[in-house]
Length: 376
Ligand code: BGC
Image (cartoon, rainbow, N blue to C red; front, side, top):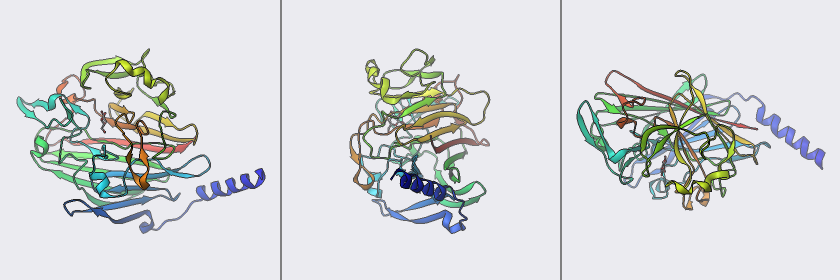
């Protein structure tokens, strides 16, 4: 019996590893996903690599909505939270699942900032602050254009959106492009670009929620996390940074060596956060891509490694998930997924000493994030 099982396992592994030659149309599929409540078509784009692994995206919010990756035995599970229908994405249950968040992701204190002496007031959607770009037309809610792109690294889809001057009270016409590439090594590379015709703050991120045991599994507290961060941005009780770059050493935020997420989470009782919801300062020398985080599900062996060129990463432990029903009717329980969002530090627009988020005409915003899936 054990012999049969090990032969079956070897055959599965050989099949998964065997190189496959794909025609262009087999690397990408484009179809209608559904319609918004206003009747706009939402498309779904599926990228398929040589291993047969698929990554799915929809044009609402340029959302990364499904990714099935193998465990140690080659068994596939979709590790991303999401919905089967557009109405799910339009519902209260959608807490920024897989979307592009912006124009400025995370929080801006009291929604206020000034550029070159001119004051701006943004929408307060997370009282008393502005969160993830505002209200009705934040980047997670609008419909993006999608173009297929051929590249050597794998199939890509390029989403683009023109955010007009004054949208969500942000200044300037902002042209944004977000390209997702699925490589044959099961990496999803996200490349962000933006240009403007007026000085304006920009900090984009992807807000994917991961559970490496499969979306809908009860908890993420049994996942092991490592963060390449010796410091974090200390905040007030409304999660606005005080300006202090504080050491993680000796605190519950020290993930410089691997720790289970559940190991210390309940000790965060004297914080207002109900769990992890912190921005970490990524250790880096120079500007290039560095490993920011590594998440592992010890049971399945699935691993997610996050690389980025950004200064910060928000680790959010799904503290506001409430059992909403997602794909295939699965429930997304409290703390059953985590986000690892690469970005600038929150409220940077009001912190002149921090890396700037102000984009000026003639400059280009550029950000790379790689979500690499593997097994251990
Ligand atoms: C923030 C959380 C917020 C969540 C909303 C995260 O990026 O850090 O505070 O509640 O997004 O889904």
